[in-house]
Amino acid sequence: MPAAYPFSAVVGLDDLRLALLLTAVNPAIGGVLVRGEKGTAKSTVVRALATLLPELDAVRGCRFACDPAAPDASCPDGPHDPGAGVTRRRAALVELPVGATEDRVVGTLDIQRALTEGVKAYEPGLLAAAHRGLLYVDEVNLLPDHLVDLLLDAAAMGRAHVERDGVSVKHAARFLLVGTMNPEEGEPRPQLVDRFGLVVSVGSPDEPAPRAEVVRRRLAYDADPDGFAARWSIQDNALAGRIADARDVLPGVRLPDVELDRIARICLAYGVDGLRADIVVARAALTLAAWQGRDEVTPDDIRDAARLALPHRRRRDPLDPPGSDSSKLEEALREPDEEPDGPDDGGPTGSRPSGEGDGTDQPVAAPGQAYQPRVLALPKAGERAHTGRRSQAYARRGRVVGARLPRGSGAPHLPATLRAAAARGSRTVHPGDLRESVHIGLEANLVLFVVDASGSMAARKRMGTVKTAVLSLLRDAYQRRDRVGMITFRGAGADEVLPPTSSHEVGVARLAELRTGGRTPLAAGLRAAARTLRTERRRDPRRRPLLVVVTDGRATAGEDPLTVTPELAGTTTVVVDCEAGPVRFGLARRLADAMGAECVPLAQLSTLRRAA
Image 1 (tube, rainbow, N blue to C red):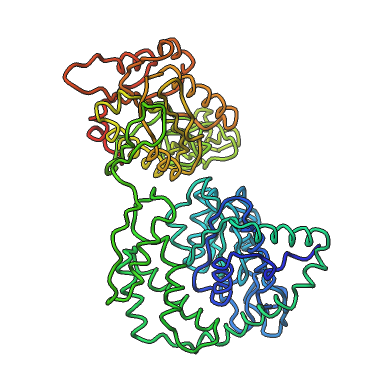
Image 2: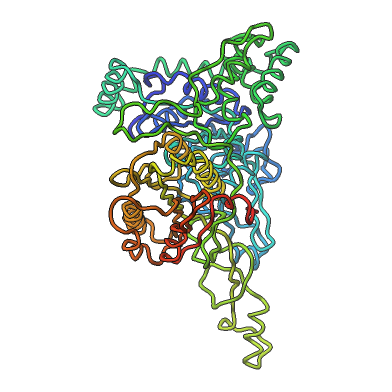
């Protein structure tokens, strides 16, 4: 196997490298989440870190890498004989794939031996393999919810717990957790993000010289991996030695009370949730001091620690764009006697000049405060392929609604099984009598917005209200794990301003930038929606769509929209009626009737049934 790309050979990415090195020194910080677009060396840096981790001693023959100095009392391979011997090996690098099953992550039990012989025959999973090493989760934002829950439990307790048919196995699972993600593919659950001690955003170099150097080094590595690694071995060995030295120094580093008070004031000023932020900043500051070879924390240590540990923890709207916290952090880091800078006039405003256009653009209206909209859901239950919180679907978990012949995935339904045996006139249950439970859970959908951005919407000063409604629905889709897409129509045609994605933040940004003006080609918007839905059905046939058309029903350009509605037959649709004023023509309701859709007046979107 060729040598890994050297950690020291990575160009730039100073914050990321520092965060990884600090967590390698002190895993109690809680791991690192790396956010960045594709092709920014996220995975390369993480895999390179594993080569710097100090070697460890493990009990010989233990599949769980128990420390000989303090073996795990509940280790499935224990109790260990003090004379079993010691093995010295490198810390493990375990990669958790997005498609991993629950059994592969936590391990599996041999049910037959457990029930017949009474032994806990256990095959370790990835969490056991990662104990005392590095657990790397690529595309962590795409990880299924149930695996996220397993990771959260293991990371919080330092143990993995497996339950199968009354047989219980648990073992130590303390690991350095590193996750990478592309924000364009959607955000992970807030609980998971908070569990990471440090979060770093990375990007591509924006100057020619460093970009050229990245390519130069990569080509040299591809041509001769072992030779390239050898040329950087001195620097990597120095870093590995510095990690070991910092680990030795760390227990003796002092955090003065005045600096601890500074941490508390910063966290309060920044508005973080809970106390985990204070603890992480303190641990990171202590580790920074140890990394620098000092025995006492300084204000600069706290500043650097806060910059890595706080931005993802501030109490804020989950759909705020990334990077919107930087000014708040600088305010929190100021000394109490520093005067704040003048007001920042670079943020969003209620409106701004439209700039160059076709002469029909109206000022950009800003959305108001989002509210909790009524629940919009598909009327019939589907087969759940995507765990979420919107529409009912048949699933492996959820409310039991009936029984059926076994398909190999459901839990037994005892009453139905006994009834089947009784129907044969027998008191003995045969294999053919077995029935399994049918569960109803909740699934995620594709929510496609078709928004009227024509001049008629702006002329009546309704666009701010409309944007607020769409923003509220976008937030609702975020909370319910949906994919979202957005099509707008105005002037001569329709634009797909947001192709279906899991990145709700992008949807919010596109909504804020949305301009209005021109005629109303409603038919073009509906036809664009039909094309998008056909494409998405080919990509993901099991994800069911929900179409939300936001319009006043007017059509002043193009063909009659009623001629397009057959293309959307069978699609669950909600028409949000934006018509206002003393004289109303009911055009949106007429469109909804033609589509077999529900029509919801805009003013009632937030006053009907509330979301649970």
